[in-house]
Length: 358
Image 1 (cartoon, rainbow, N blue to C red):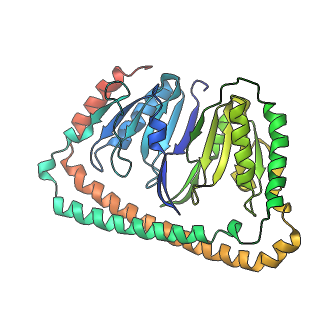
Image 2 (image 1 turned 30 degrees about the vertical axis):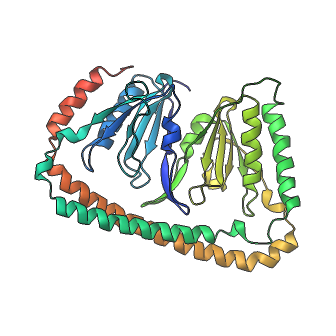
Image 3 (image 1 turned 120 degrees about the vertical axis):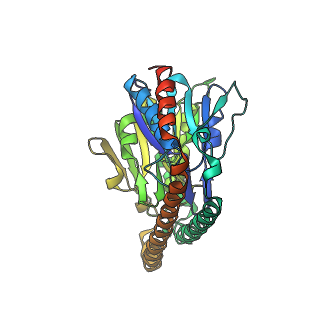
């Protein structure tokens, strides 16, 4: 990681497969140390995380910003790779505790600045229940959108098409990464969301690609062959001893949206040209030409109909998430009057004066 490098991801997201969380595997490596934040909605956790991240960046540290998919303007965590340490919001729905308190992490309870006896508990329960209902409805729409994915149209892709995609990937991997050597230690694979479906629509972080890659292979995935290709890339790079960032698809997380190999400055992205950051070398891989064109034409009407219905389901999901976020904002408003933000600010100022690297 370069000094001052900033990257942005999501560690969890609501997907067509339900709530999909990656935070436990991200916090799990034994060399990493995380301060786990506790406290209710509106208790200043995101603001605290932003101040800590800004302090680390001002000190020249690389910062991994971990955004909240429920409200992408808020943060779930920050991580400093050079220090192997970070801070994470360990409250629902991504509740987490240190595996070994004092060895792999510790707690920081911002709820101590809240006068809980003054809270309107009935209002909190009602808002929380309504918010959960809108999120459930959003997940149902996302499940429908996933089921309508045109890339999964029966009869579109045959085994020989998948094999052709794998051969293409192996050829490019040999050129980019070379041949795995005997006894080479396998590279580490980190999984993080590069995009998510949120209350603001699809949020994607192209600058994260630009910060780590000089060139990008853009995979045209209209027929669903990118997964075959990316699986080969991820496996080959790992066997060559290279660390890999594997980014799940935000709608169908069993699929892969992108594979980044920062040490080689190269990324592989299943998407459109609009997803590739300007200024990067772009190499377009037309995987959509591999299946038989006659077969594609025969299925085109079905695929177009499914795509239209999918877009409607996604729009409905976003609307449900927007309503859930509005209710969450109301929930935060219940907590704020009971918070001693002056004391929290004083505590944060004092904490940052002793923060490593500042």
